[in-house]
Every structure is written in C-alpha cells, then in structure tokens.
Image (tube, helix red, strand yellow):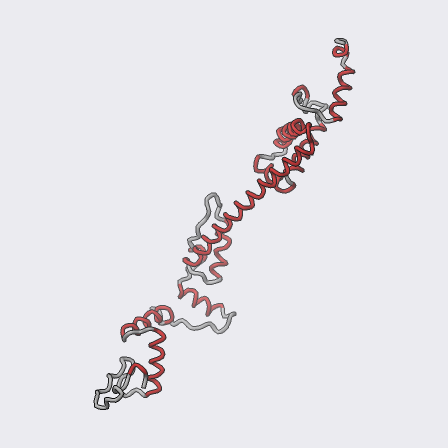
Length: 256
C-alpha cells in the first residue's frame, strides 16, 4: 500500500482505515498502487483533473491529429522523414520563407534569407528562430562597434607616429597626400567608403605614405604647380630643389 493511503492510527486499532488514494481505487494491486504513487508525487498532481490536463497537453504534441496520424519517435538521427514529422508537430513553419526573422537597420536582409533554410532544416520553430536571430544581430552589432573603435584608435596612433616620423615636414607631406587623393583617388573611383576600406586593409600610416609618394612624384609638374603649399617646413630634398630653383631664376637673382 502506498504512503498516501495511510493506515489505522498506531495504538488505536479501532480507528477506521483511511480512504484509498484517488489514484489507487479498490481492487488495484499494491505494486501498481505504489508505482502510481511515485508518479503522482513526481508530477505534483493533486487530483484527477491534474492528471487529465497533463494527458491532454501530451496528446496535443504526440496524439493523433485530425487525419488520425500520430507522432512517432524517429528511428535514428538519419530518419529525415521522422524528424520532419516531429519538427512540424512542434510548430516548425511549413517552409523556410515563413520565418519572421528580424533584420538590423540598414541590412539588406540577404543573411536572413540565406540562414532561413538552415534554421528550417534544424527544425526550429518561428519563436526559436526569431530569438536566435535577435541574439545574433545584437552580438554582431556589438562586435562591429568594437572593431570600429579598435580601428579608430589604431588609426589615431599611426597618424601620430607618422607626424613624429616626418617631423617639421609633416604638414607639407600630409597636404601632398590630400592632393593626391583628390586627384587620383577620385579618378580611380575611390569614394569615402573605398578609402576607408583601403585604410583598413593597409593601415593609416602606409596609406598616407602611399598618396604622399604619389603627390611628391608629381610635385615638380602640373600636379601641384603654383598651388603647391608654401607654408611649413620643407624636407631636405625639397629645400635643395627650391634653392636650386631660386638660383636658376634670373629675376630672383637680379634682386640681390
């Protein structure tokens, strides 16, 4: 007899026996009653209504549908048809395009379209897929922001190091780089985004040096011309070139 059934009070054999538990009616054997008692305790059922509601919920998932079909456990991990039946019964959308996946602002939605069939194959419900997509979007946004911040910090460090390297000629060299970007970068189809991708690829310092070298190569010709920067210190070679030009200028020499 189970614990719930009780017994006559000790020391009072004339006390009436407790009524049988609701899950162990008259005539049920003691072994079955004991098993049912353990199940009732584990489930926390307080009465027949609790047990019936539990069964009803179980039947919604594993019971027969309107067509009389019941859900069966898949035969193995490779039982695609069996797993499909389970996923569909648990609430998987009928097709991948039925998912309502959130897309971050500014995103073209191509990633969501690409991942939807994968989520469908894995058997995710719309709620599960939406939750996973929201987590991914948030994580990706945080990662992009961290990478952006790291890039800006590194860019500032490289720019400061380049100015120290160039010393007094830094302003002039940077001006030459800017002019080269304006003339040749635009001609090459490099907009602001393209320049930033180039900067991220090779670094701020190397990119400025690249365009400064291009600007310097054309400094004696029509690239800079009369608009060449006159303020700031010159590099030693630029100073030599300017002095040589002064001595070659007869009008300039005639003043002295």
